[in-house]
Image (cartoon, rainbow, N blue to C red; front, side):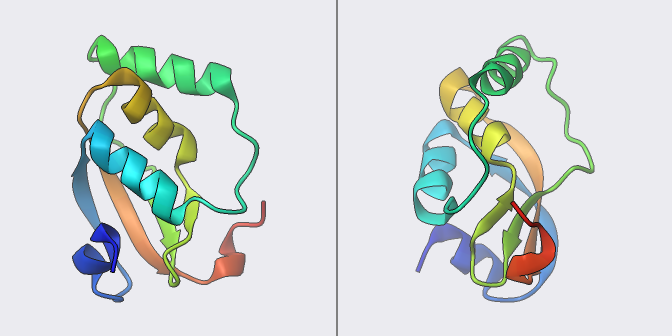
Length: 102
């Protein structure tokens, strides 16, 4: 059972989660499959914003399917890992796999 499975307990919901660089890596390893190609420039831009304190909590979710697949948020999670900064995000869990086509 992954960390996010424990947090959401299989229930569709949303909540703010504080993401450390270590947790970002775990989420990416365990949940990021069949996603879009990574845009390194986007990861770098977001990481820089996080490092200088310009990253803000927003209504843009990091979204996971009802099977735990990461549907939205890989660049932000990669930026947390790259920046070394702990950041809070709104996570939403429990969507059908086909909600976001990639």
